[in-house]
Amino acid sequence: MKCALLSVTAATAALLGTLAGPATATPGSPEDPAPQPAATAAPRPTLTAQATEHTVRAAQEFRVLGTAEHLPSGTPVTLQQLQGARWVDLPATVRTTARGTYSLRVVLDYVGSNSLRMTGGGAVSPVVHVTVLPAPA
Image 1 (cartoon, rainbow, N blue to C red):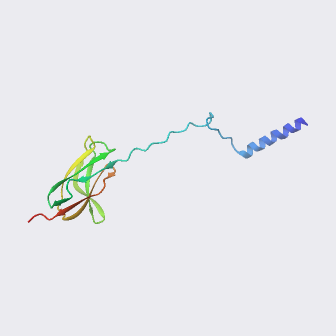
Image 2: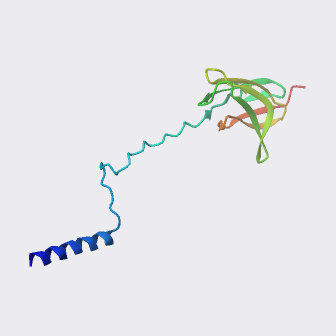
Image 3: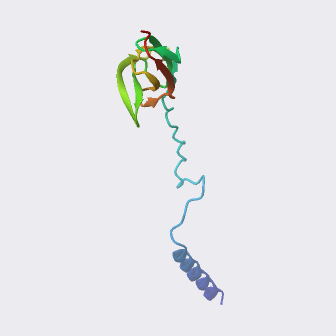
């Protein structure tokens, strides 16, 4: 009788093992792979921008100053102007310094409100607004 009970128990265990599927490792067991450290994303590059003047006369020089974070020194940054619905690169580019700053001399002839921004190294600065008044007669 004891032998028959043991056979039923072994057969039940074998049947349950096949129904349950493959054995899974418990955390901390040798079969469990080591947990992988969370991948840290590289910080995103950023640019700031500010104009030294908010109102200028046509052909009057002013500067756009700013900082560049998480960009290598010497990265070129370009001035863009909003023209209609498009941002257009202006022929005004400067490289960032070892300290992560830049200073760009700008002369605008377009009379009216100008929306400007800096772009470079995958970063775009906030928009800076400069109003250009007609040149004195």
